[in-house]
Image (tube, rainbow over all chains, first blue to last red; front, side):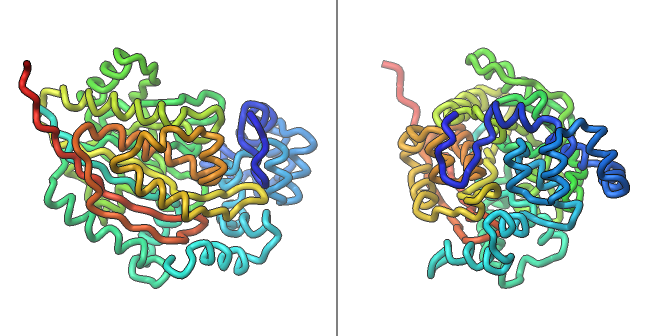
Length: 115
Length: 287
């Protein structure tokens, strides 16, 4: 799959293979018990799901762009972000190096005068 | 015989669920979106659908990336929602219609769509939010659904043309269903948005307007877009428009757009709602 759209990593077979362990861990966060277990001992939880070094470091850094580089899919990463009380606007701001208010203003501006 | 009354397509942004739970429909931020449903409520009251075929994409509640069907058709007595991990309230169950599901499944496979059949299927916010928008208070006791999940998550995705054809096959199947049901078609998600990467926050009003204009009577123009072009034009998650294409495909008659609401932004998304009516083509007499 051509990865030639600026600022975009298409979640294709290469990314899906790379990210399987990380995304599987995030999938487990559908359960409140699992979310609590992650918060209690993050390292142990990452080990249980077999995250590689790159993925563990990305999770530890809370840096969404690094998690995507490591094969994370945003629908699954959103479940991880939710544990920290972050929504898609918070992670949008983080990825674009803006404050949340700047990011929200950019979205409003996309609507133009007649929104 | 079953009759297809029309289709509704709408955005399914999770925070809409939060706004409903917190009764924010009239807040200045939310009102421009929610007011788009006044028409839908009147239309549903007038048209009285018995069943809805719902094209949507699962976001990691029922399916994981380990086994991910391109097209999956629900055939359950009832569909439950569960905790999706990000704090939106869990919805009440929605009734299924297994007889209709199996009729559609049989017709699809006969039509060479090799779908996955699901007698158990959790439905996520991509079904429950549009349903809660159409039936406030989750008062959806009067309707039964057939959820059809389309992979919009892990590439390769099915093409616009393929999703449109899937819809056409569903439309033909409904028209041969012997029960007197009034059936509506629902497509959820979109319009343009991107949650991930340095292009997060991407919105393309011009392309959205093109989609909203062409979907009614020139959907073939939209089927020419490749998935790659769709990602470029609509954003990485704007590909959810595939669900809209399937919905449109399932309207076999003369189609008119009787309602449109478009608002930027709801969360990171260009939010849209349309209602399409399906009018049966006059039958031609056999020569």
